[in-house]
Image (cartoon, rainbow, N blue to C red; front, side):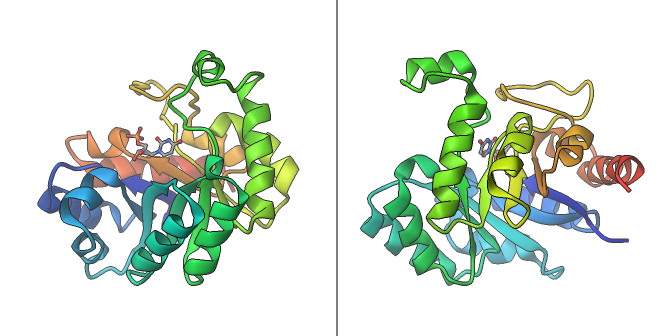
Length: 231
Ligand SMILES: O=c1ccn([C@@H]2O[C@H](COP(=O)(O)O)[C@@H](O)[C@H]2O)c(=O)[nH]1
């Protein structure tokens, strides 16, 4: 069976746990995601550990955000690890995104538009007035123009972003919660089925899977539900 378009966020406190979660979920999902918690603790070794024998696609979610020269160096450094996807913050601007794209030619650069944990009130407080989907749409357009071929947005903005950037761009959505699951610190959320129906290409799901007593079974259940709902 083809693995479901899910990136499991391996936000684990230690490498052994992350590698165990990766081994349990990789029969069911296309991708595992390494974020700041693991990478800052273990560095490059973490990639081989979670990739394991399966060779699953690894998404390196470092959300780089600095001046172009610094981001170029960081993207070049981690591109040696051959992650399939690397994130940068869209708010870093066009030159920064271009620098990442040029420095990691074998990795898909995904621009994070507006973090899924932010509410519209939060956006107002940081000076981004107007509805979230308008800010996301603007940042999505800027990022694609700068060469990003993937975008991170909440499931609530997927259809707006898809209409803006067209079919060739990979849309990645965190903020995904199965019906009845706690939203935790996520603010702009939708179910996996809704996110996919609205046009997402890759769903990022962490705690609803890794917080389960059986992460493999939790991943399999979400994957099966997606297959039932989406032809
Ligand atoms: O806007 C964003 C960008 C990245 N993330 C990351 O996705 C996962 C979500 O984990 P859950 O446990 O499913 O909430 C996490 O690693 C974040 O760093 C995001 O949530 N929102």
